[in-house]
Amino acid sequence: MTMKKKENIIDKIEKIRSKNNANWMDLLRLSFKKAPNETARIMSKIYQHDAKISKLVQKLIKNK
Picture 1 (cartoon, one colour):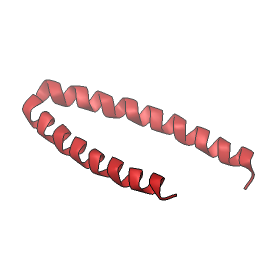
Picture 2 (tube, rainbow, N blue to C red):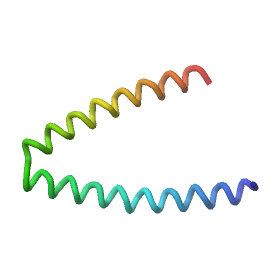
Picture 3 (cartoon, rainbow, N blue to C red):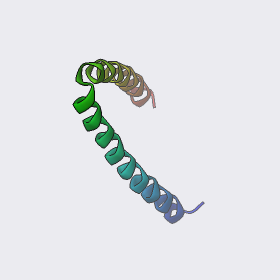
Picture 4 (cartoon, rainbow, N blue to C red):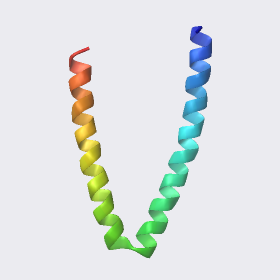
């Protein structure tokens, strides 16, 4: 696969992710309006898992 095709695929992924991120944020806003305490607990769990993922990524970057 040529570099141009790879870049094209990456551009498509970026566009899809940006739309999905907007949807995710809309859902987050709605959740905080309707059930703020429950949403905060779930967001805390998401944050903890994201932190674990970040630590694993750091290990990969250091050991490339």
